Length: 80
Image 1 (cartoon, rainbow, N blue to C red):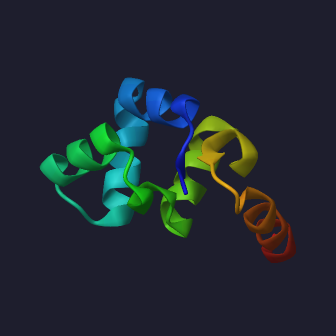
Image 2: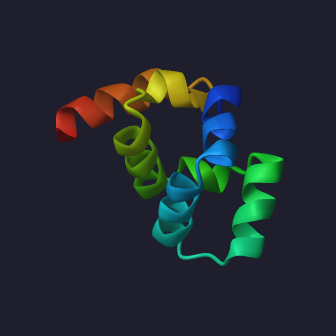
């Protein structure tokens, strides 16, 4: 599972959000650049998704491109 094109585009264009996700993942700028460039699945870790949801107002369905989105949405609702 990876981020949608919308999610990647937002990350590329929003330095504050990029920095917040980078700090959440505890990675350096070079690693974060590579993760965004390749749309690495590490960007879909729970903490990173929380930062993205809060920073953009988008839902998991809008951020994630993959078959498990429905399962994640249900899990997120149960934990809210």
